[in-house]
Each structure stands twice: as C-alpha cells, then as structure tokens.
Image 1 (cartoon, rainbow, N blue to C red):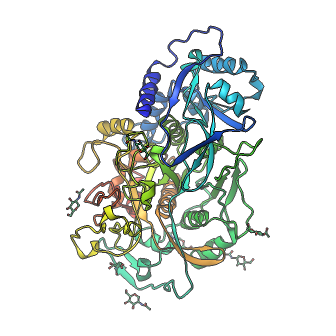
Image 2: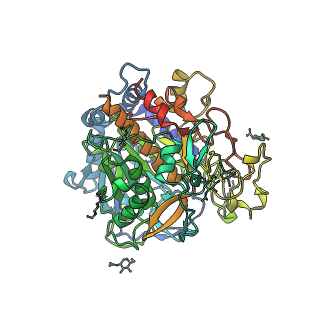
Image 3: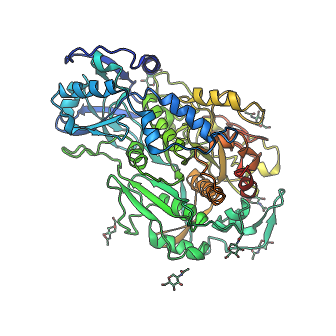
Length: 621
Ligand SMILES: *[C@@H]1O[C@H](CO)[C@@H](O)[C@H](O)[C@H]1NC(C)=O
Ligand SMILES: *[C@@H]1O[C@H](CO)[C@@H](O)[C@H](O)[C@H]1NC(C)=O
Ligand SMILES: *[C@@H]1O[C@H](CO)[C@@H](O)[C@H](O)[C@H]1NC(C)=O
Ligand SMILES: *[C@@H]1O[C@H](CO)[C@@H](O)[C@H](O)[C@H]1NC(C)=O
Ligand SMILES: *[C@@H]1O[C@H](CO)[C@@H](O)[C@H](O)[C@H]1NC(C)=O
Ligand SMILES: *[C@@H]1O[C@H](CO)[C@@H](O)[C@H](O)[C@H]1NC(C)=O
Ligand SMILES: *[C@@H]1O[C@H](CO)[C@@H](O)[C@H](O)[C@H]1NC(C)=O
C-alpha cells in the first residue's frame, strides 16, 4: 500500500513537474510526504542515528527532457533507423538531462533557508544531482523525518535510514528523490561458486575436438574446464585478431573493495593467453576504491571478470574501475561511509569521462524490490545516458533462477517486501533496467540450462526441483544457475519500444523480461591467490558477453563505423540472428520449475549464446 502510494505520487509528479511552482518564500514546516516505504523485510529498526553522523545526501532534480533523450537513444541504437550510430556527445546528453533552472534555484533557496550555502553543494555536470554533506540532525530537520540505525538481520550490516521523508510544498515538484533515506538495497556480487583445485582436479586441456550440431568444434575438455580458447571456439571467434589501436576499449566495474590481482592475471595469461603476458589493464579508483595488490586482499570476482574479459579481447585497451563503499557500515561519527548503493558514485565518475570504454560489464546487483522505484528509475536513466553516448552495458542477470536464489527458508525467498507478503518471482536490478543488456548463464557443451538447483534440496516446497525431463540431456546433475523473469519497475518503456519495432513471434510480446542473452557460466578456470580454480555464476557470463561486444566494436570501428552502444534494439531486431538458441533446461525457483528454455527467445536464456562469426557480419549490415 505504502509503496503503491509512492508509485502513484511518482507518476503524477512526473506529469506535473515544473509546470507551476509559486516562488513564495520558503518556510520550514512539516512539508509534503515525498516518499514512504514499508518496514523492509529482513531489517530490524534500532536506536536513533547519532545526530552528528554525517550523511552524504544526494538530491535528484527532475529531468524534464528525459523523454527526448530516450527518443534519441532508441533512434541512434536502432539499426533500422537513419540515425543509427549517431551517438550523442557528453554535452548533448547533459543538456537533455539538465533540470529546469527554476528547480535549481528552488532547491538552492530551500537549502539556504537551512543555513546550507551554495558553495557547500556539489553538483553533477548536468546539475541534475546536488550532493551535500550534513549531519543527521540537520537532515532530519530538512526532511521532517527521523533517522534510525537499521540492522540487516542475516548479515548484521547496519545502515542509517528512514521509512519516509517530506519536503516543503514549494520544492515538492523540484525534487525527484533524496537518498540515503528509504534505500535498503545491499549491492552484492552475483553468487559465484569458487572451487580451489589442485592440478589433479582440473582436467588437463584435451584438444580432441567435439563437433556440435551447428558444426562448431570445441576442445573436449571445455565441457569440464572453460578457458579463453573454449569461448573463442564455442562462440566462433577463432583466429579473429582485435586491433588494439583503433580507439576501442573495454571496462569492468568492481565494487565492495574488490580489485584484481595483476600477478594472478599473468598466471592466467601464461596458461590461456600467452601473447597477452606482461600486459595489464588501467586501474581507476573511484571515490577511493582499493588496489593494494596484496594478493590476500584481491577479489575473486574481480579476478574472474578481468581475466576473462581482458583475456578474450587482448590487445584491446582495458580498464578496471574500483568503486569504494562496502558494508558493513559502522556508525562512525564524521565519516560519510553510509552511502547509497555505489552505482551512483560510479555513474557520477564515468559520466564525467570524455571517452568511457564502449563496452562495460558489471557482475553485481540486488533484488529489484529492495531498490525504491524512484531510485531504480533514476539510476536506470543514467545508464541510458551512457547508452546514448555509445556505451554498451552488460549486467549479470543473477544466479537464482526465477527466485532470489536464497536457499534459506528463514529469509523467505520470493516474498514481496511491499507489505503484501505475496509470493512472486524476484528479478534483479540493474539487470531489469531496460537500458542495459542482461546476461544469463548456460552450462556444459552442448550448452543447456541447469535443471537442478542443488542448494534448494533441503527446502520442502521445492520437492526435488527435478523437472520431468524431456530428453536425457535435460536430466543433468549438479549445481547452479540461471535466470529471470519479468521486471516490475520497468515494463512500460520496453513494451512501447517493442510494440513499435518488433512484431514477430520470436521476441517476447507483453513485458520486458530478462535475460536478453546468455553465455557459458560455469567451470571457468581462473587464477586466484596464485592458484588455479574453477568458478561459476552469471558473474562469468556477463564479462564474457561484454568481451564479445568489444570484439564486435573492434569490427565496427575497423570499418569506419561507430560502436554498438545501447545493444538491445540491435539484439531484438537484426542481432537475434547471430545467436545459437539454447532449448534445453529451465530456471527453477520460488517453489516452481520456472520457465523452460525454448526455441527462440525465452526468459531463461534470452536469444541464446553469441555466434561471433554471424554477429560480425550482422553488425556491418
Ligand atoms: C580427450 O577427449 C576425447 C573425446 O571426449 C576422449 O575420447 C579422450 O579419451 C580424451 N583424452 C584424454 C587424454 O583424456
Ligand atoms: C558434457 O557434460 C555433461 C554433463 O556431464 C554431459 O551430459 C554431456 O554429454 C557432456 N557433453 C559431451 C559432448 O560429452
Ligand atoms: C591473427 O594473428 C595470428 C598470429 O599473428 C595469425 O596467424 C592469424 O592469421 C591472424 N588472423 C587473421 C584473421 O588475420
Ligand atoms: C614477458 O616478460 C618476460 C620477462 O621480461 C619476457 O621474458 C617475456 O618474453 C615477455 N613475454 C611477452 C609475451 O612479451
Ligand atoms: C596483506 O593482507 C593481509 C590480509 O589483509 C594482511 O594480513 C597482510 O599483512 C598484508 N600484507 C602486506 C604485505 O601488506
Ligand atoms: C508480512 O510479514 C511480516 C513479517 O513476517 C508480518 O509482520 C506482516 O504482518 C505480514 N503482512 C501481511 C499483510 O501479511
Ligand atoms: C516446461 O516443460 C515441461 C515438460 O515439457 C512442461 O510440463 C511445463 O509445462 C513447461 N513449463 C512451462 C512454463 O511452459
């Protein structure tokens, strides 16, 4: 109910924004309720936050021309449109997300009326975000609210949050959202299962070829150990040489203080990409992201993402972004570590770059429902800004089947946190944002979707999760994987686009669903802390897919064409002909078998896995 109310308010607001706003003097007062959420599932409310605790408050001003940006985005990303590839400049994008000048002055005078000087405000380049560091006591006054310390029951992490906040009537229409307030998301790595291996555990490379039904030959050992060569073979890219000098770049984002270890990268290259030995990537620390290179502090996620994405695309220049911000937050007077989820911090940084990498992969996310809609929409709109500038963003679609992947019944898998306690499929964010490409995962060769979710065996309502198999291949043993469903927050945009552009039966009709595409996602052989191991999860498939996008960008740039940019309009039209369909398996969760992988697009593997040989022709049409 509360959430529905705030959704309604949000949508009314977006219609009425900026049409009228009396510029009468601002008065401190109770104000008008801006946002309210219900007590979030899994969090316990504790004592009042220390009044001196510093908050880094981010105020989003409405972007009255965002719909114009969105129109440009679809036109320049649609291979059938005359403007395909004519990406916008940084300045053009900033002009289209700029707030109304009256919003800027109204918010400034509101803050000034609380003693905050304009010089104390930090503005995004487009002025659509205002950041101010103030103590909790002052934030409580400005927002007519009370901050408490909330503890995440499962992990013990604590945050300073409130369930509602208000702003004066006079600025109501000039503020879209303010955080940290009602945001209870916890960014996390997509679950990866990492297995240390002694050399006996990892079967040696076996270069005897298996020939797949589509005629592609793959080393026999790729079924149990995935290497760079396996991916190049399986996805039909053997012998392709990226240029490395035509302005193409690839990026990987890291959060939660993860960084990639360069010594491990060299071991990986020696094992799987000898020509890349001695090369490395550019490290960028965002807001103090770590990079000690201390081998025992490096992150397995960061090692996986960089080893495969950069190994696949060598010698394409590569960048690893390490964004600071890590739970647990410990209430600590004076340090504004109590940040929002850090996508915004990264976005602020990358949107300010003149030439961001044209393909960027992220293997982090959270359940969509834990991110307030207003915030999810705003972060998603920022991804659109990158798309309009020619950047492809890939995100892991998550490893929990149609559920949230949590095997612990105590955490009440698949129950909505909006006060209804309904059982529903749980999509992940940012994978659910329509302006990014969500990458699901497959396993084995030939590729299938894992039919059994092993962690669920102990849950009574999941019986065995073993589906009636329709073929021997479907009756597979073992672990993880894969993915998701329809999204709750983002349906309208994508539906509109699809109605206009996609009238054939092989694409989803009624709602946006995820994932868009897939790639292998288990048994990846990486190096970590000096040793080889196997790892899996959609954490592996997103950097893999981004690697192939970077190779496709190489093809386009070498032919004098701009990069692919926002990829989905290409995927859902021409691009889908460049995929190998995955038709075996399903993605159980929430006590259901989930969806079946079927012929054509399905909500388990999207269009399937890439065929680079075909895609490199399609991207030049
Ligand atoms: C390599 O793979 C082939 C095909 O699966 C198999 O017949 C052969 O025994 C394998 N060789 C070794 C050394 O494992
Ligand atoms: C790959 O491994 C899976 C699971 O063990 C098996 O079902 C499949 O037949 C294997 N593929 C080949 C080509 O041997
Ligand atoms: C790629 O480079 C390798 C090694 O230099 C060379 O043997 C191969 O022919 C090149 N492939 C193409 C398609 O040019
Ligand atoms: C890497 O550096 C080592 C030591 O300097 C050198 O022996 C080796 O040839 C280099 N390898 C490549 C591929 O450049
Ligand atoms: C590396 O990190 C570990 C774990 O944080 C720490 O114990 C060790 O002292 C560090 N080593 C160096 C050389 O800093
Ligand atoms: C939902 O679950 C919570 C926690 O178990 C409970 O306090 C609340 O009353 C439930 N709400 C409804 C509508 O069932
Ligand atoms: C998936 O396939 C099974 C076996 O053919 C079938 O019983 C089930 O209804 C299918 N599920 C969906 C959601 O279509």
